[in-house]
Amino acid sequence: MRVVFMGTPEFAVAILERLADEFDVISVYTRPDAASGRGSKLLPPPVKVAAERLSLPVRQPASLKTPEAVAQLIFDAPDVIVVAAYGLILPLQVLAIPPHGCVNVHASLLPRHRGAAPVQRAILAGDTETGVSIMLMEEGLDTGPFALTAALDVGELDVESLTASLAHLGADALVEVLRRIEAGTVDWTIQDESAATYAAKVTRNDVALDPGMTVSSAIRHIRASSRQASIRILAGDLDLVVLHAIPSPEQIAPGIARRTREGLVIGLSDGGLLLDTIRPAGKPASDGAAWSRGSRLTTDVTWERG
Image (cartoon, rainbow, N blue to C red; front, side, top):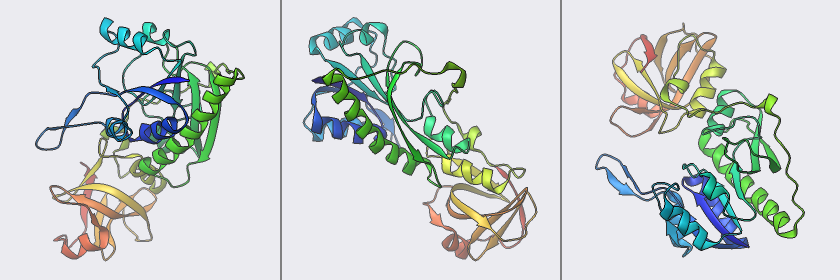
């Protein structure tokens, strides 16, 4: 079966690698190289790096809506297009090209968490279980029928580790569905619209900490944060990015920050939270104990969101 793959971030890499082992991947579509870092150097997306390592043709159109992009896909003549976190809308002309349709690997148990940030939203919502859905794409946002879902426990995973686990789970589920398509045995299940929720892109405001939060809620916010949506707090005159935290037995009032031997403890509505991995502004990440040894913070100070 001739497959065109479309994906961009690290989540899609494991899926592409497994796909290339099992099927004839004729081309890989990914987003254009993007500027990153202080020097604004153009960097290739992870899928491009993986595709070149696998010696697969790479295409990086800015849009799939142009006549040239549509014509190229028609020329490729894929039996199926596989999509995993591509980041571009597939117009109707593209959805209609492959005889077996466009199959999407979506990182949630549809119809829950349709949209751009299903992994982060599952963590923020306190979901105990999430998973992947292999769905047939249509014009609506993640509204198409699905052929297979696979679940896993969220546990205490953060967004990076949960995304990696879902990528491998999705790769296995995708291969199973494509084999069913080849064999003519695939069945598609219509989604229950009454159970649908939308996972909007996560911003810094979505993951921000507040003294009125509970400890468990704050930890979920930290687990859902990322470099793109980081958590900053101001403790006295210190500007800190929070990377990891655990509950603390320290007795401390909400809105107060205290330096301890283990790191900085902040007061929340129902107890203390030890920030055991932080990144001071303009400096590399540090474990809490190392930060504490070099900190100039000597007394309790107030803290607030940065």
